[in-house]
Length: 351
Image (cartoon, rainbow, N blue to C red; front, side):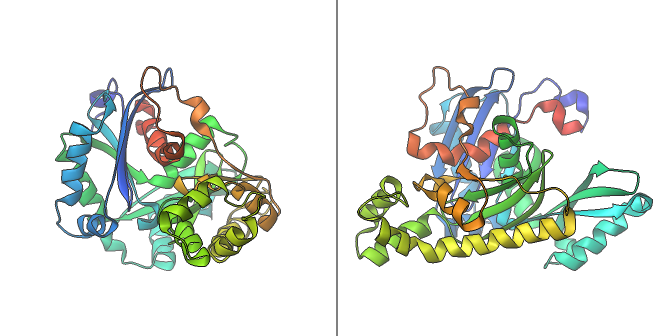
């Protein structure tokens, strides 16, 4: 692919997750949203499309583009965000002398730390830092089957993929642009069915982790503990959450086991970063994003549990929806990943 071919084409974002698909076009010169849309999908059917040959994903991307778009798309060139849980991202350091045999070093890292055969993966890597003594390498790997199926489904909707990346990388990009992303930051992206955790430093994702607990898990926890309908549990979650009030004790008790499991995973990611990547640079903040970040008091919970400043990130002040109707407040958080994908400046792909 030649740089000349793409240089004048704007980029749109397409976020394919385990629970749905979102699309967005942004004019990055004005940070103006030109078009967006989303569709919630059946997680079991998405899994079949990602891993097999089901047309379900392709059909729904087509329907999203044709029927569920608010505004318009600025081009057909798209960056695909794939589920972070289906990818592997690691950062490691090597002596400067190892740069000549970097490909071999990456293969060793893959064999040691990725629990699937290297031949089933697309593997990419880049040097993100260098000093006189050592280089820092960022490596990402994604299942070939998942990438191929996402690309095929996207092309079926008349879109042309130009880049594929884990969703958490797009979140990191938006946080860097809209928040204090230059600080060493822990990102906790709580989706409907899973939570992705990453360390963002110097505009790069350094390490990722995650677990199968999300916003829907919180709702079910409350419904079970309080013996109420799921709809009522959702209302309690988003209206009361962990904030002070007459029901706080019961809601907090319901959410405690799931939140503790997330904290344990955060600590694992922090330990890896501190021990293998940076003994000097201290993690400065934790930012919560995603659909499950709409629990009042969740920032304070992580602040207390980890003894670290934590808050819910709100990058929306950066994006201007212009004359388009904005997503309802309770749905905005679901667009963070796709906004990060759409925030790539076309020339940035070719750096």
